[in-house]
Length: 249
Length: 313
Image (tube, rainbow over all chains, first blue to last red; front, side, top):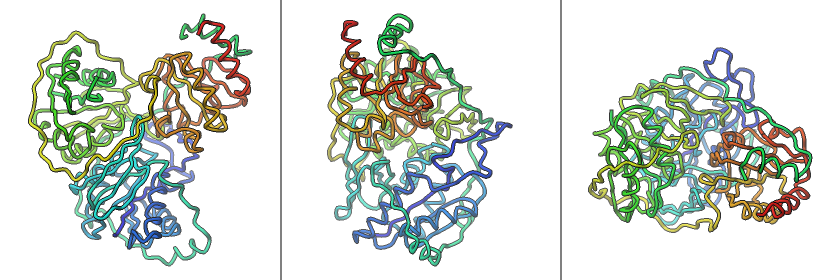
């Protein structure tokens, strides 16, 4: 089975987002950018499926600026076979991304698309399910484990209250949650090897998709600040404050 | 303008997230209807009909909706949307699962996890794990919105809306429910609890959460955890409070051995009173805590247990 993994280049997980003074957005100049952590989990899962003989070919795609190529190289260094870079400097919304991905799916014919449940920059959490709907495919979102069983997938999903297992017929979309796996670090030889792996260069126009934004960002501001309170001496003082001052116990 | 709110329920009872989502819908202005999709939901629909300000309840009662799988929910909702200008649902895992499908079918960009409604087309939502708040205006003709319910008050009771039953969704669907393993607990649910006590990486192990459990049982609290504690395998993922877990806003939030990573703060900073217990007095959690106790949690938790006993708990 061919597996397609869309990945996004985002502000690194460990870097605190700073709001621009003119409230136009978050400052992304001169900051460390990395692969969206949930997408790393997707890449890892695809590579494991290939190592297990379940996936025949693994393709990574990123839709973004020229530097998104670095993110594609990272996935190739982790073990994926080849890449597709759809170059755009616009910060596309999930609907536009899903439409482009649909075009790629139709061209490449994967049986499974696996991607992060959300990107940690815009936090929409929408692309995977949108793609599934546009393709009329079933979905297994927030995956905790994925197993291929004949022509279907068994996906254990992280839901409020525990785990839910669903069986979805292939082709299908899977979105990854934190506990699915622990992504590997690429080894130096694999990083060198990845440099020779092919990356197709595309543009949104190649897929005939209208990518105009539907949401206009009016402003981006700092979240409301919470004032720090007081330090208490000991546990007895804490219980006293909670009971007699705050009245919450 | 007509707005459809999708109810949060477990086929037996209506959840308060529904009432909060109704409040968000009312802020957009217009008529608010509530969709109850599930199996055996007659009582849930009757409860929804009592929410103040609801025009009517639409009930869809079918086996394929028992678990609210995304494919079936899409099939129920998309045909209804001819009559609505907007659809709102709480941002719990069940609704996060299918709402983007509905949006894609309607050719609409979903507006996720809104914490504020400015007008019928303008919303505030957290981005970058709550490090920034974006105010966005949608140009789509219909709005598809998920609601961070902790940011809204519950709509009251006292309504007497009619309940219409609609036709079953047409299957078959390409997904089927196989099984579920729910965490069995007598404690309140994290998102409903008046008091939440959470442990972080400082707890050291899953076994040590027993100390937190004991205090939770005394206070009738729910138990949560930071992502670090979940990643370390101390507790299951559904304990996770934070941007990648659940957003909670209880009366009292007690953070134990949690440093206060921004992604955790994003999920609990709307709590009314925050207590932090941490041995590192520089931990960022203290910058949001109303009451901070700099102490070794392995000493403080047994003491807290004892003090609560003395106080009659």
